[in-house]
Length: 209
Image 1 (cartoon, rainbow, N blue to C red):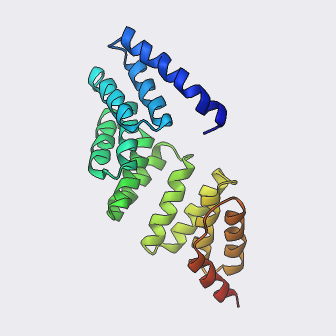
Image 2 (image 1 turned 90 degrees about the horizontal axis):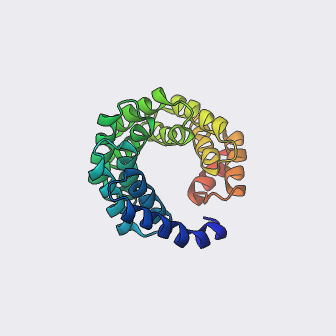
Image 3 (image 1 turned 60 degrees about the vertical axis):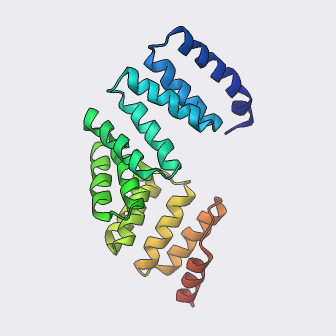
Protein backbone atom coordinates (compact mmCIF):
# COMPACT_ATOMS: atom_id res chain seq x y z
CA UNK A 1 0.00 0.00 0.00
CA UNK A 2 1.39 3.39 -0.97
CA UNK A 3 1.84 6.14 1.61
CA UNK A 4 -0.71 8.31 -0.22
CA UNK A 5 -3.31 5.54 -0.16
CA UNK A 6 -2.66 4.95 3.54
CA UNK A 7 -3.25 8.64 4.23
CA UNK A 8 -6.44 8.69 2.12
CA UNK A 9 -8.01 5.58 3.67
CA UNK A 10 -9.61 7.28 6.73
CA UNK A 11 -11.33 9.78 4.42
CA UNK A 12 -12.50 7.04 2.04
CA UNK A 13 -13.77 4.94 4.96
CA UNK A 14 -15.68 7.89 6.38
CA UNK A 15 -17.30 8.52 2.99
CA UNK A 16 -18.49 4.93 2.64
CA UNK A 17 -19.65 4.77 6.26
CA UNK A 18 -21.76 7.84 5.52
CA UNK A 19 -23.16 6.22 2.36
CA UNK A 20 -24.10 3.11 4.35
CA UNK A 21 -25.91 5.20 6.98
CA UNK A 22 -27.76 7.13 4.29
CA UNK A 23 -28.51 4.03 2.18
CA UNK A 24 -28.83 1.09 4.59
CA UNK A 25 -29.96 -1.23 1.78
CA UNK A 26 -27.16 -0.37 -0.64
CA UNK A 27 -25.22 -3.51 -1.54
CA UNK A 28 -22.58 -1.46 -3.33
CA UNK A 29 -21.96 0.82 -0.34
CA UNK A 30 -21.51 -2.04 2.14
CA UNK A 31 -19.41 -4.06 -0.31
CA UNK A 32 -17.04 -1.15 -0.94
CA UNK A 33 -16.93 -0.34 2.76
CA UNK A 34 -15.85 -3.92 3.39
CA UNK A 35 -13.11 -3.61 0.80
CA UNK A 36 -11.66 -0.41 2.25
CA UNK A 37 -11.84 -1.88 5.76
CA UNK A 38 -9.81 -4.80 4.37
CA UNK A 39 -7.19 -2.41 3.00
CA UNK A 40 -7.03 -0.67 6.37
CA UNK A 41 -6.55 -3.98 8.19
CA UNK A 42 -9.83 -3.58 10.09
CA UNK A 43 -10.73 -7.21 9.69
CA UNK A 44 -13.74 -7.57 11.97
CA UNK A 45 -15.40 -4.49 10.50
CA UNK A 46 -14.66 -5.75 6.98
CA UNK A 47 -16.35 -9.05 7.82
CA UNK A 48 -19.42 -7.25 9.19
CA UNK A 49 -19.72 -4.99 6.15
CA UNK A 50 -19.37 -7.84 3.65
CA UNK A 51 -21.82 -10.00 5.60
CA UNK A 52 -24.28 -7.10 5.43
CA UNK A 53 -23.79 -6.84 1.66
CA UNK A 54 -24.56 -10.55 1.32
CA UNK A 55 -27.57 -10.22 3.62
CA UNK A 56 -28.96 -7.49 1.38
CA UNK A 57 -28.16 -9.42 -1.80
CA UNK A 58 -27.76 -13.18 -1.23
CA UNK A 59 -26.64 -13.52 -4.88
CA UNK A 60 -23.65 -11.20 -4.51
CA UNK A 61 -20.88 -13.56 -5.52
CA UNK A 62 -18.15 -10.90 -5.40
CA UNK A 63 -18.88 -10.13 -1.75
CA UNK A 64 -18.77 -13.87 -1.00
CA UNK A 65 -15.37 -14.15 -2.68
CA UNK A 66 -13.96 -11.17 -0.78
CA UNK A 67 -15.32 -12.42 2.52
CA UNK A 68 -13.86 -15.83 1.74
CA UNK A 69 -10.47 -14.18 1.17
CA UNK A 70 -10.59 -12.70 4.67
CA UNK A 71 -11.40 -16.06 6.24
CA UNK A 72 -8.64 -17.70 4.19
CA UNK A 73 -6.18 -15.16 5.56
CA UNK A 74 -7.38 -15.94 9.07
CA UNK A 75 -6.85 -19.66 8.48
CA UNK A 76 -10.56 -20.42 8.64
CA UNK A 77 -10.51 -22.66 5.60
CA UNK A 78 -13.94 -24.23 6.12
CA UNK A 79 -15.64 -20.84 6.02
CA UNK A 80 -13.56 -19.74 3.04
CA UNK A 81 -14.43 -22.95 1.22
CA UNK A 82 -18.16 -22.60 1.88
CA UNK A 83 -18.24 -18.98 0.67
CA UNK A 84 -16.44 -19.75 -2.59
CA UNK A 85 -18.70 -22.74 -3.21
CA UNK A 86 -21.69 -20.43 -2.74
CA UNK A 87 -20.15 -17.94 -5.16
CA UNK A 88 -19.79 -20.72 -7.74
CA UNK A 89 -23.41 -21.74 -7.21
CA UNK A 90 -24.42 -18.16 -7.96
CA UNK A 91 -22.00 -17.69 -10.88
CA UNK A 92 -21.00 -21.14 -12.21
CA UNK A 93 -18.48 -19.63 -14.64
CA UNK A 94 -16.71 -17.47 -12.07
CA UNK A 95 -13.01 -18.11 -12.58
CA UNK A 96 -11.84 -16.37 -9.40
CA UNK A 97 -14.03 -18.47 -7.11
CA UNK A 98 -12.64 -21.64 -8.69
CA UNK A 99 -9.11 -20.26 -8.33
CA UNK A 100 -9.72 -19.60 -4.63
CA UNK A 101 -11.31 -23.01 -4.21
CA UNK A 102 -8.20 -24.61 -5.70
CA UNK A 103 -5.92 -22.78 -3.28
CA UNK A 104 -8.08 -23.74 -0.31
CA UNK A 105 -8.17 -27.39 -1.40
CA UNK A 106 -4.40 -27.33 -1.88
CA UNK A 107 -3.94 -25.94 1.63
CA UNK A 108 -6.08 -28.80 2.91
CA UNK A 109 -3.90 -31.26 0.93
CA UNK A 110 -6.90 -32.26 -1.19
CA UNK A 111 -4.73 -32.30 -4.29
CA UNK A 112 -7.04 -33.93 -6.82
CA UNK A 113 -9.91 -31.59 -5.93
CA UNK A 114 -7.52 -28.63 -6.02
CA UNK A 115 -6.38 -29.63 -9.49
CA UNK A 116 -9.95 -29.86 -10.71
CA UNK A 117 -10.71 -26.39 -9.35
CA UNK A 118 -7.61 -24.82 -10.94
CA UNK A 119 -8.46 -26.41 -14.28
CA UNK A 120 -11.98 -24.98 -14.05
CA UNK A 121 -10.60 -21.53 -13.26
CA UNK A 122 -8.32 -21.64 -16.30
CA UNK A 123 -11.13 -22.94 -18.47
CA UNK A 124 -13.08 -19.77 -17.74
CA UNK A 125 -10.08 -17.40 -17.66
CA UNK A 126 -6.76 -18.75 -18.99
CA UNK A 127 -5.09 -15.39 -18.29
CA UNK A 128 -5.02 -15.83 -14.50
CA UNK A 129 -1.28 -15.90 -13.90
CA UNK A 130 -1.56 -16.68 -10.18
CA UNK A 131 -3.56 -19.81 -11.00
CA UNK A 132 -0.81 -21.03 -13.34
CA UNK A 133 1.69 -20.42 -10.53
CA UNK A 134 -0.40 -22.27 -7.96
CA UNK A 135 -0.99 -25.04 -10.46
CA UNK A 136 2.78 -25.35 -10.92
CA UNK A 137 3.34 -25.98 -7.22
CA UNK A 138 0.43 -28.43 -7.10
CA UNK A 139 1.69 -30.45 -10.07
CA UNK A 140 5.19 -30.48 -8.54
CA UNK A 141 3.70 -31.88 -5.33
CA UNK A 142 1.95 -34.56 -7.39
CA UNK A 143 5.18 -35.43 -9.20
CA UNK A 144 3.81 -34.40 -12.61
CA UNK A 145 7.04 -32.70 -13.68
CA UNK A 146 6.29 -32.20 -17.37
CA UNK A 147 2.93 -30.54 -16.72
CA UNK A 148 4.44 -28.50 -13.89
CA UNK A 149 7.09 -27.14 -16.25
CA UNK A 150 4.50 -26.18 -18.85
CA UNK A 151 2.38 -24.43 -16.21
CA UNK A 152 5.42 -22.60 -14.83
CA UNK A 153 6.37 -21.32 -18.28
CA UNK A 154 2.82 -20.08 -18.85
CA UNK A 155 2.75 -18.29 -15.49
CA UNK A 156 6.01 -16.50 -16.29
CA UNK A 157 4.80 -15.64 -19.77
CA UNK A 158 1.78 -13.89 -18.26
CA UNK A 159 3.76 -12.13 -15.50
CA UNK A 160 7.41 -11.88 -16.59
CA UNK A 161 8.37 -9.69 -13.62
CA UNK A 162 6.85 -11.94 -10.96
CA UNK A 163 9.44 -13.25 -8.50
CA UNK A 164 7.16 -16.17 -7.64
CA UNK A 165 6.85 -17.12 -11.31
CA UNK A 166 10.64 -17.18 -11.67
CA UNK A 167 11.03 -19.25 -8.51
CA UNK A 168 8.35 -21.71 -9.62
CA UNK A 169 10.01 -22.10 -13.00
CA UNK A 170 13.36 -22.69 -11.29
CA UNK A 171 11.84 -25.50 -9.24
CA UNK A 172 10.12 -27.04 -12.26
CA UNK A 173 13.34 -26.86 -14.29
CA UNK A 174 15.24 -28.49 -11.42
CA UNK A 175 12.93 -31.50 -11.45
CA UNK A 176 13.25 -31.63 -15.23
CA UNK A 177 17.06 -31.76 -14.98
CA UNK A 178 17.66 -28.30 -16.52
CA UNK A 179 19.90 -27.09 -13.72
CA UNK A 180 21.72 -24.17 -15.37
CA UNK A 181 18.51 -22.57 -16.58
CA UNK A 182 16.92 -23.24 -13.20
CA UNK A 183 19.72 -21.30 -11.51
CA UNK A 184 19.21 -18.32 -13.82
CA UNK A 185 15.56 -18.12 -12.85
CA UNK A 186 16.32 -18.65 -9.18
CA UNK A 187 18.78 -15.76 -9.28
CA UNK A 188 16.18 -13.63 -11.06
CA UNK A 189 13.59 -14.47 -8.41
CA UNK A 190 16.04 -13.38 -5.71
CA UNK A 191 16.86 -10.19 -7.63
CA UNK A 192 13.13 -9.38 -7.76
CA UNK A 193 12.82 -9.77 -4.00
CA UNK A 194 11.74 -13.39 -3.56
CA UNK A 195 12.85 -15.12 -0.36
CA UNK A 196 14.60 -18.08 -1.97
CA UNK A 197 14.72 -21.36 -0.06
CA UNK A 198 18.43 -21.73 0.85
CA UNK A 199 18.15 -25.53 0.98
CA UNK A 200 16.78 -25.64 -2.55
CA UNK A 201 19.48 -23.25 -3.75
CA UNK A 202 22.13 -25.48 -2.17
CA UNK A 203 20.72 -28.62 -3.82
CA UNK A 204 20.65 -26.84 -7.16
CA UNK A 205 24.29 -25.75 -6.82
CA UNK A 206 25.26 -29.32 -5.99
CA UNK A 207 23.62 -30.57 -9.17
CA UNK A 208 25.57 -28.03 -11.21
CA UNK A 209 28.95 -29.11 -9.80
